[in-house]
Length: 211
Image 1 (cartoon, helix red, strand yellow):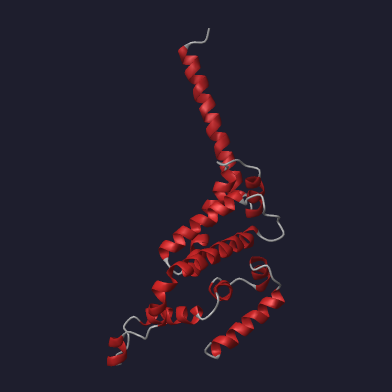
Image 2 (tube, rainbow, N blue to C red):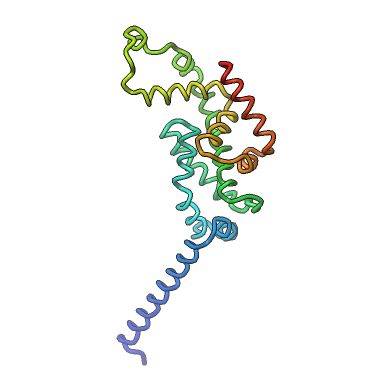
């Protein structure tokens, strides 16, 4: 007959063993490459630890890309959440032809483009006058330098990017703000490096010409 003391000792040993297994699992996941985690996540259920590890690993990068593409903190948060929802449901679609990070950025770009187009249709009537209006009257009248030069420069850049269609804008941001090379961009935008080089060149010419 097993006494209470023996039972407690066995339970304690069992819990210690469980924690040891969990620690070893966490160590293996932390050491795994993105691609290895993606392969594991494709075979997991809804509460898989490999997918959760990928979410933690890429959370900040996805949010940053969404912020660059959406241009608004609230919209970026909504977009990042949508990206991870799509990544979860599409976790079995990563074929390993590129780095997982590149594939993930492609998902983020397509998600943000879809959301931006939807937002543009929803807000077009409200924002047209603001987007195309003149500079603030006070600044034009006084001719005084703007104390927030960096903010003004950011607004100038946004107005410049606003001349581009949604996909060209995303391409410029991914190339020059995020620093991706043409090989990675070709995966994200489902194109070829040569075609994207020509596209960037045409965008530069168009912007330099003022339209």
